[in-house]
Image 1 (cartoon, rainbow, N blue to C red):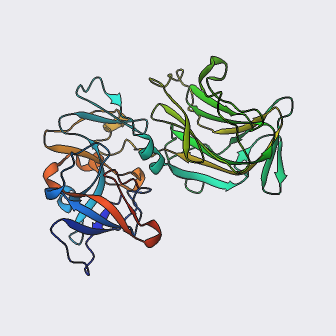
Image 2: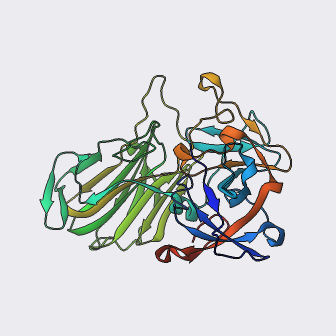
Image 3: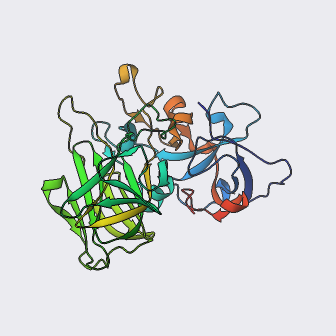
Length: 367
């Protein structure tokens, strides 16, 4: 396991308000990558209230395994003072009663910033599989004249990518496509255990957008005024933290939150294979990507108990519970427990390098 270690560049003089740090490990990817250079507002002059999901730079003494050449460690603040926290099915649950913890949702901007690419390619190349995929000059053509034609991501979604699939299946997934020419409806489907969500986009000639739950279960959201999809538009569809979102060219066009996932039947298998389909005509899919939410593994003394029986962790007053976004490569509070707020050195306000990634950042590390 690696810490998200950060080291003060030797050629930069620290000021009284802003410090500079360089990210040296991948444990906070995708928010912070190796080589990122951060401007960090010192905690003593930062008037912002401490919030869940903020990224903090903490003194190296939080973890006895951090070497003496490291000044500070970057982690995400997941649990707040005085509450109980638990990692369950890859998500954070928290509350004041250890016997009644609730899923903690991330806001849309943070979800989008933390989506991890599992597979991305031109068209619907393997591991996409299904009948009716035809090669097209700029992607893959699906023919759904008189019927629905579907292809599915055959590799399953785990906490890595196709080349390094990881150990844990991930429940919260997303699919992104760029559409080409065609007159058919684009269909996108996401499964999370016993729940299936399917969105249907009419082409520009007809318009309309519908979201259904559990196939025959009926429509749960719609936008009859949606103008329809046109060639070249990029669609992002996710089911994350019990919330479904649909974006077209970066604009939110449909949202649906639900209280909780339906339970799998005893001995049931988690299915999380995204699907892409077409109905009532043909459609070219120029690009297709499968993505996933960050998946916090229930590892470590404070993330799981012996025998993998989950036990909530109490965060004492004046302490916080920290997680690394790249869970498989992070040493965090799952291993060394809650840490004192007094070890917080500051929170980032900007990434000033590498040049292509330079941007202002909010406290959660989102541009």
